[in-house]
Length: 440
Image (cartoon, rainbow, N blue to C red; front, side):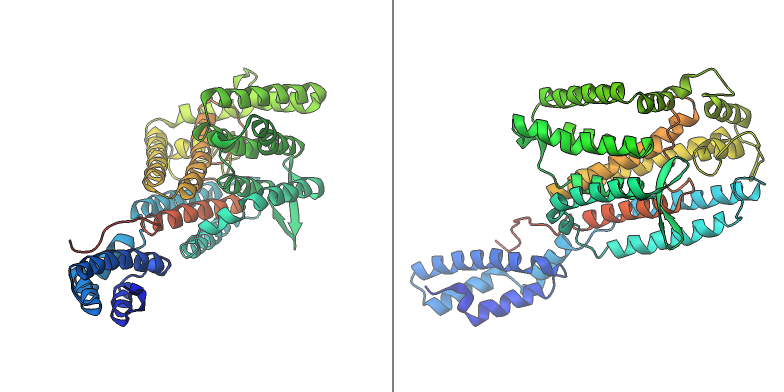
């Protein structure tokens, strides 16, 4: 028999099926799968003594209606949008706007430009537009550039730290009069590129040593140079999660952790200024000095204790609690809306994290699952750590609550992260899956 693809009736059948399937990138795979089944059936009929053209025609008829097959394929492979995550995102973003409205309504000396709410609304809108744009982005393109993206991001991070202007101790680049938080942006890019790296379970002993320096050592030194403890915690959390989830063995993971701890201690001994600074930051919540190192923790606990179940109402004034719009926004919201309000915020945050985890588990593409998993670790740290900080259970390291705290660059990055998660989930049924769609 000649090639099945050369028969006009076969091509007509394939085109009729693919017209029903909106996932254009799967058309070639669908055609290949259908051709195999048509060829098998046609060859069987040909061997039974039927004429070649008639055997092909009957084989096509045995497949069933092209429109019906195409419709089934479309429903199997159509884009998936998780409205649950969208609704939770809208709820948290709305809470963030209410929080900034409440803080700005109080006469706070550090909110001197009076435009925090306006900026929050503008950047929430821009973030929403960016999220919608990412819906049309094929995340698999990121995988191709991961090996290049990581060193390029490290270079940009080094340049930003060297040339940046310090604001609250962290380097910012000036871009046409706007301060750009290059460290935070690079942190998210490093996490994204990490998802496309060679998995630890495939590393040799030599690679384990060299890649640990590359993926852990160099970024750690840069974060120390930039006094960026919060960004360092986010990246290291994602990196350690990457090493654990895709380890060859527990022994390999322990070797990496052990080597990292030894290197970090050695660097600290060589540069005592940095070691004293980071040690003071990490142990500040344990201090009993309510007017010194333990000031932030003390004021946060005082605000929470004074809140009661129902709080002091919208825009309640608390002149003792610092950084109500950023570091201490969770404490302030509890002070305003009470312990009940704090529990609701915590519950929504947990639901948000659980929802992303559910999406990650359902994704079949390995790269997509890794990407969503690493973003989940970062977002999870950002939700959990500030809440623990507010209750005096974790050091005050300036990790901000996603969508709730004020921070324009961070807000855009969080919308972008959720946009990537949604576009990965969108394609969960549009990735190769050799299924039998024809009628038996």
